[in-house]
Amino acid sequence: MSDTLESSTNSDSMQHDSTADENTIEELEDKVTEIKRKKENVEEKLIDVRSENRKYKQKLDRMSRENEKLKQSPLFVASVEDILSENEVVIRQHGNNQEAVTEVTREQFSELEPQDRVAVDNSLNVVKIISDEIDSRARMMQVTESPDVTYNDIGGVDEQLVEVREAIEKPLTEPELFENVGITPPNGVLLHGPPGTGKTLIAKAVANKTNASFIRLSGSDLARKFIGEGAQLVRDLFKAAREEEPCVVFIDEIDAIASKRVDSKTSGDAEVQRTLMQLLNELDGFEDRGEVSIIAATNRVDMLDDAILRPGRFDRLIEVAEPDVAGREQIFQIHTRGMSVGSDVDIEALAEMTSETTGAEIKSICTEAGMQAIRDSRDTVTREDFENAYSKLQETKKNGSNAGMALPEGSRSAFA
Ligand code: ATP
Image 1 (tube, protein in one colour):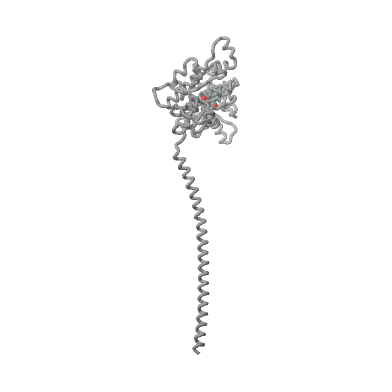
Image 2: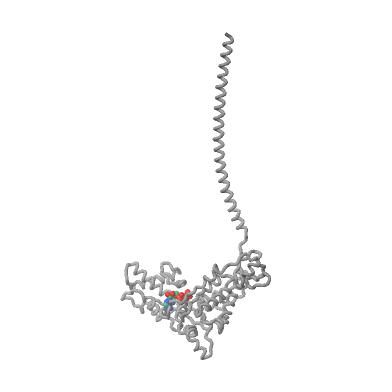
């Protein structure tokens, strides 16, 4: 009996053991599954972190590169003045005009020519040659094949036109007249007078009449924008003019480079002096200049250096003043030529009314009168439109602004 009991107890305990084992296996399997899931999670996170890490690394690289760039000092622009032997050249830094001898690589030495522009570092090593294509100097000269302005488009400057034609047009169209008499024609003429009186127009009309190209250059651009390059630009200007001959060179605002010399030692002034000297050189070398005529213009003739006005240079001074009443009438005629003007418009009366008005201002009165007609949906411009436009101009001049006024092309300071 006790045997039977014992065996039944044993079998119970065995069964119990096997159930316990099964439970443990299940638990273990669950744990393995759980661990696998966690592992997958961790792996996914790892991928994310790695990708983040890559991104940060790229960002770091980029910032390090930018940092390096910021740490590098900027390059300076210089011109090659002279080519020496054995890979050495003389360069002149723009801005301070300091000259230095610097060594260049063999390749650079074979490429460089005098007047080339180069970029140099702090130690004046030539880092690169600045190619001609990106040379902004060329952009500042406005070359026109043959401008479309004629003498008929300019009013109130009859006397001035006679003088300019004699000095510029005749030597180009009838050079034999000067040869027969045995005189050399004037080198250049200088037009002076208030802004907007037609100085540029006169130069353009001469170029048109002589079938010459027209190159325009502004003295103030030369002095302000191209510090260190002014003299080179003047050389380039005359070179371009010789290539385009016959050619009329128009130097506007010449006072910016040819003002009376003052005893100042700043590098800016020295630079302007160099530019002026180069201009005088070009004027003096007239024989080599071929069919190139020079017209300069200024609003400040009183400021000009005597050197520029000496015989053989700009020895013809022609004043282009504000037009008188007859001149204003002519200018009104010119600018209303293409306009549909009402029968009540009396040009003579308009000219009487608009005293102390320049050609550019008369042009703007005409444009403004036309704008008023358009605003009122009319095809014809009336006397009242002109009168209102004139009042508006006077108002604008009093306030010193151009607000609301139609400005003609080229009349930058007509309302100053
Ligand atoms: P700035 O000294 O400012 O260069 P400017 O004397 O050269 O002036 P222009 O550029 O010739 O003046 O004139 C500007 C515009 O004004 C011309 O395009 C033209 O429409 C008009 N104008 C000026 N003067 C006259 C004039 N005498 N006859 C006809 N139009 C004129």
